[in-house]
Length: 627
Image (cartoon, rainbow, N blue to C red; front, side, top):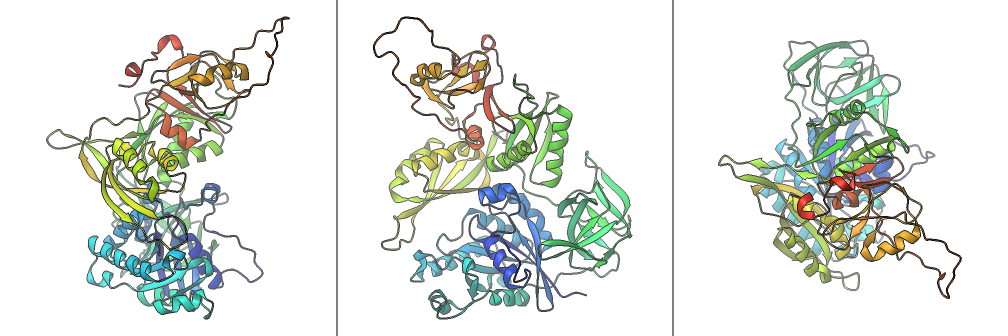
């Protein structure tokens, strides 16, 4: 059997996972010396490159001597936690990356808890030891101690708590197990590499456990697609081996949850060699295999030698906390900027997404052309919407709504999140006021280590806040901190409903007719509130063009033209320009809209509109439209 190690890299967002994988690939000889490579090679999607985050978990492998090390890079944002949960069964150990200055953050806790519950061996990698805040070494010791406390808090056993520690500067491509070697390496008095990390993986991560049978069995943990051979099932082989032409059985479930058994023939078998899926004759036990031949395979299915074998328990992820309504586009501009899809096609696209992403759920609604998608957070929804938009679809989405639970005594329970904020000290009072307005309770106020002469003093605040209180708060937080604040959160529990939370106090400026916005008309509307766009934009009755300065809605005419006469007065024709507009990105629209409004998404534009377009059929009073 091939000498194997299966390991994943887990961390909070922006702690250096993907950068570390880049250098692991380079130093293992995966790339040829003449081969051109780009930074963050594992972030292959357009959205991942643009946003600088990992969204989907991905596989790669490196050869260390005669040992093949399969590496899985996982997302660091809590909204994509489902990606982390489903790959834990593919690995036997984990590299836990922690920023040497920031220490363990919310997603660190989430992913570590999942790894410990699976019994995995953990290797702690203290990354970014070259940061100025770590120049005297005290902060590094504090971070190690905080991480150890986190291990104990999450119930690590004695063996797991006795973890090896590697100190690394991933962007420079070196690491060391010896604390005293950090400064000679930083000063380049010593030459470093990632060899100590490779050695620690082989020494501390156990080889994959293999069942005592020659019958093939695999749990599908991921999916891919090939234009040539169709859908690909990815997972670790628990027992036996697989080869091309082999007869296997897919053990899954139908749409209603009833067990399903389906025989098929393997058309091709792949394994990971570096970043590529390489076709091979056979893949043996313990390795991560990619199998083609069944178009219906889903994440969580078992692929077995025969139907008499007991399938594995299906992958279970934590339940969603938010819901969003997706609808076909009923706007007057429907079909002019993209593909105006019918309800059947929208339903198929959402079901396809749910099959690939086990953290999402799909539900039918009372209306035939509207569907509910349940997920973890606003960012997860924003990524799905942006992906569909880039595929050329037109559709509409509603305001994200929190999913409540009911206690045994009939009490309504709502999800509570712990928000962890890292911000300059001078903004702490403003931020505290914003979060307390949203029913947040300050549970921790901690001064961060400050390197003399570099930057401003920063503090870390922790709030326990209802999940609905976080909706729309991110942009307010970034404004309050002048864009210099870090924000992350994770679900902690469900608690009794905390009462009403103010969302958007202002009403909307709504176009009362179809046409094209004219600068003269918009100039007269500036004093009424904030406009979302300038002149030359197509509008229709019911479309939102800005935010009213008052709490009620206002129907306005953005298409009004200046009357031309042959009478001129001195000073009448001086040049006037709009003072400015507020750019509404997709995320800002999701934060801004109320329950009676839609976001219209097309490949070219993101608009907001009222659900009821006709001004004669809707009230402008906030009390009437928001119950």
